[in-house]
Length: 97
Image (cartoon, rainbow, N blue to C red):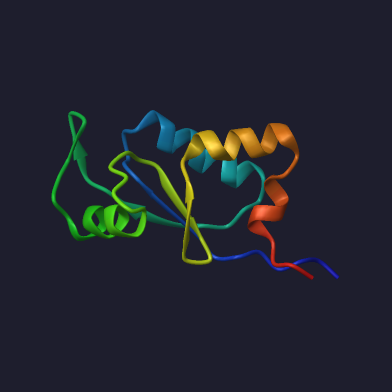
């Protein structure tokens, strides 16, 4: 029986290259996620509800992307890529059986 995936949220900006990488990475690995747009113009994040929610839930992080798994702050794209290299990525995204 396949394991159930935890709920994943990605806060990002449409023109952010790191966000584009993170979204592509998750899609390529079949990890479903909901995307929350943080409006950014020339590197400045506009004071929007998504920005304030991301900042509050990540304990002050202002950079995108920020990823949340099962409502808990996970981190950014660097953690994704590090866990993938280490072979521990699946454990972060799947429910314990």
